[in-house]
Length: 173
Image 1: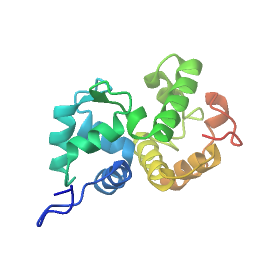
Image 2: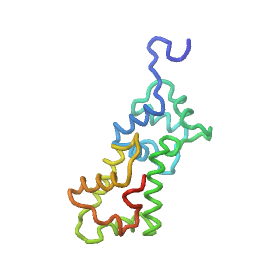
Image 3: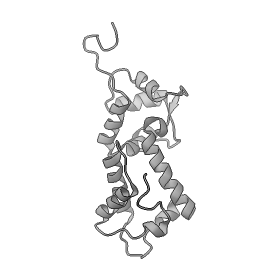
Image 4: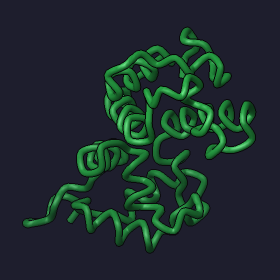
C-alpha cells in the first residue's frame, strides 16, 4: 500500500499544518516553538524530541516525514528558522534593534516607558506582541502594525518607540 491508502491510516500533517496547529494551541508559531517544541531553549529540537512533541499536540500520520520536510538541510534537528523563517526573522530584527540600542533585552524593557507613566507594562508588552504575531503569522506586517498592537493592548498611545531606537514605523518587519 502507498502511504495514506491503508484503511484507518491518518493523513499526514505538513509544515503549514504544524504552524497552524502551533498558532491555534499556543497563540502563535513563536509561542508554540518556545513553550512546546524548544522547551530546553537551546534553539534546536532533535528528531526524536520533535516527533514526540508534535504527536503530543495532535500531529497525525508520519511525523518523521514531517520532520524531514522541515529539516531540509538534513542536520538531524530543526530550528525556528526551519519551521517559520518569517517569524524567525521578525524576532531577530526586534532583538537586534533592541540590543543594539540598549545592550540587552532586559535593559530594553527598562527603557520602554521613557515618561515613567506605565503605559506599556510587561503584561501589555507581551500581550501586544502575542496579538501581533498571531494576526500576522502568515503574512507581511509593518512596524506600524506592531505599535498598533501595543497601543491596543495598553489602551494608551505608545510614546517610547522612537527614543528606544527601533526601526521607524514605515519599516517592514
